[in-house]
Image 1 (cartoon, rainbow, N blue to C red):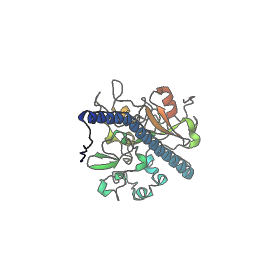
Image 2: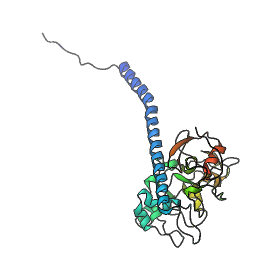
Image 3: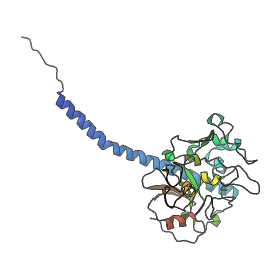
Image 4: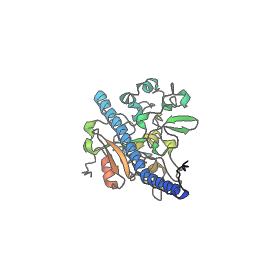
Length: 296
């Protein structure tokens, strides 16, 4: 007797059920994967800020002063905080080719010229994994130049550009020592993140990644727009009825949900919620304002 076996298979209904189950599992897992990636990006960003803070500490240990915001006196220079820090964050190669005088765009170039044009280099420590809202990770393209991008702003105080308060840490011709930080190094900001995403409202340019070159310094005040932040407006501010382009350029912000990573003058780093009130943020941005600050 011969037995004829039928090959097992799925019916259409069974197949549809399996597909539906797989789809449900993916829908459940995807948010978890995204949260893990977001958390990893935030941690890496904190690590970058930690390196910047340690670089500042080592700079101060060597020269007994903190890096300058940018230099216009006694002679204008192609120099600023992110340039001065290069040897202290393992970027000696870029620092060695840097042209400090005469002031001008001698360090600007394209990516193919990066071996001789320092500002055309993308520095990993200056970049958050989120890309800080820039569409081209690591660079800004401006007037034919490829400029290395920074996702971080140096704290200039309560106002940085174009009017300067000079009550922070880094500003025009700053010469600040840690002993000048009378509010306490654990209560004073060094660096914070920035977010380039911006709607075109109130006369503001849509998005701001053409104002983010770490090596833009040419000894003139517009350099502050690329590299310095202030507490004039709240975290994650966008242009609006009372916020114009200059204040938006230098607002602290990030692509992380809910807040911004900061480095403090004592070398510590922490995440501050975007709901922090402006008075507290401004108190953290001054070096000797005499404010009492209690952080959550």
